[in-house]
Image (cartoon, rainbow, N blue to C red; front, top):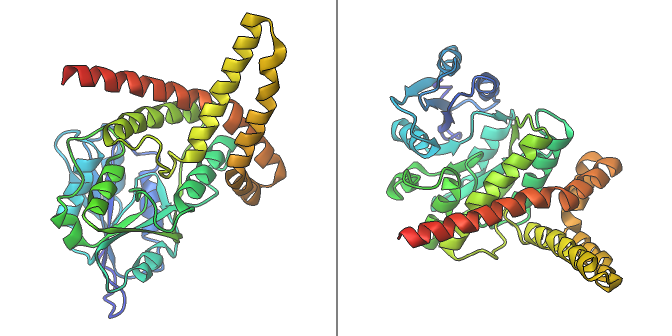
Length: 335
């Protein structure tokens, strides 16, 4: 879609990588083309899907770029950027629902200073409003918007000047399976590029999370975050969803388990007395996240979300971190 030319609205290239996203790409494109903004193009880059994604994409007035082999999201985004003609590149995912004012907000966020990456985030309430999806969407929204100058900008809502993007060399195509946006953000930040969060730039995510999918996602993200953080030497950094609060939460959970085991093995209940204090400290450290749960979904949800976050979620995150440590060690031995 070329859209109507406007003297005040910059042309935005919306770049969407897709791989087997037939269940979401249609809704994604439908909402982009329902935008109240009038000067944009859409570049949908299919990463050699095996489902009917391409047929769905072809039913919309966007430009289809079909890769000849599955190469990953970085390659797909770079391929879209190479063909983009806009004054702003706006990266989203194929399972994101653009709000009617999202593109207007992107345009409004850009001023004369082009040496910056502008980020948005997920809406607090996801498209599929079940417990585990809502938990994840609120958690990400809170984690990504608590700082005006974040540690990274996620590619589910990343806006950048095309000249800057191309000068930086785009996303690394020889990297981990995920977190290419984190690496890109860190790389540019080291060059003096500002990272700015605009919470009004929102996309609604389609998670379709169940308990198993939620824990699997936590394990996978933690695994690759750990490997990247160890290589980057910033394990203890407060970095978006890899926040200090989450690290305290996981540490508190495993410390309480350790104290309980010590009590059983030594048949001494003294070690148990510390558990309530550790749990209380954890709740206090995560009070703003718990408040975010409450503000988004009310009292009952906040109680259930806090229990899930403190008593269940840490096991998946901790298991991912431990696996990541071992992978990092093995990779270190190889090198």
